[in-house]
Length: 195
Length: 221
Image (cartoon, rainbow over all chains, first blue to last red; front, side, top):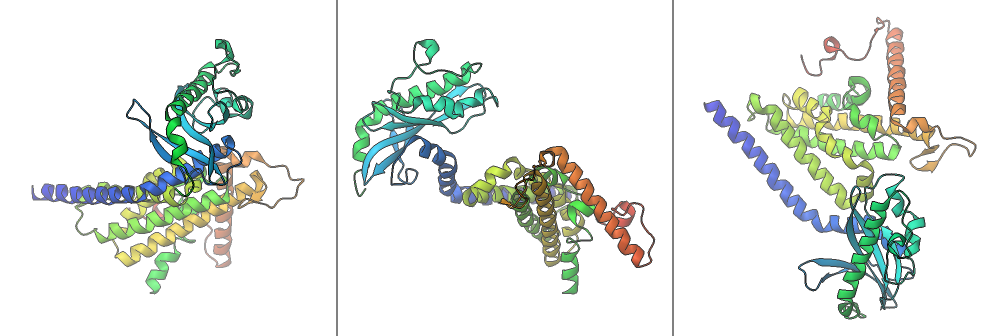
């Protein structure tokens, strides 16, 4: 009996200590990890969709509330000489193998997209994964901010044999356009010079 | 001091983890596509192995024998999660490369093997020397194997071009079967070398110089 109690006490103590240490460490590294993920996952996509900025969009990012919901969206600004000329934001839509993450860049007047880049996806290699390739994404560069697949009467050519992945990417872009429209009034004031 | 050196240096040659005691082969085969990856994985293992040996040795007297394995695994797992977090925070590209293999250090049998065979019976200082030595040996082995495969598979070493332009990369080497073939060749070469040394000293040549339970004494069974 005595031995059983000792086993329980020692094992619980060791597990408790480990849990506490890890929780502390997780807390301490949280911000740093978020920054690293932004630099290495979103960063390359941002430099694809925004061109000609002289700031660091990742560093200058800001969070905005989406009106009418309790959700927030992170917006990456592109500034030139302290003047905001474009923003990028990331949205997700359900694809064939989980969420497809798309970074969508906008010119600040909101009339045109400056481009899109796929950040995360697990689509079928060689088929759905082609939504991340230039051939598909380049269709969105300079495209008016109203997108639809050609099969539904728009002018974006989907990828043959990958309807679900193509639809997901377009859905994500539509969501981004929608969010952009809602937060647009707040944008210009958010990155005035010196702030 | 000499005892400390002995425990450290045995991990470098006589008990070299993947090639002599042939433990921890999962990462050895999986991450050694390039010398860089092998080296990074090795560093993570040095960290986990040294600290897990220290902790296991420090608490060896209060751990009841019946739950010792569970305790060892909790200690190793906590250290691995710590390494994973730190890697994400300070070396994200390496984390992207090693991906799933970092959490798998938990089940790397070297960690549990050293905890059970050495750290649970020896002092903290000796255990640290043992873990560090084994870790360094593991890193050397992984870097060597990674370098070999990278050299023939990509024609590069640590990312810089080594082979002449005309060299056609031998892509078999960076696929999974190439890992087995390379490991086999390295093991054969090491055995041949060991036997040559023994012949020079006038000792009997071993048919199978890698460890079996009679000759090894690693776990004392």
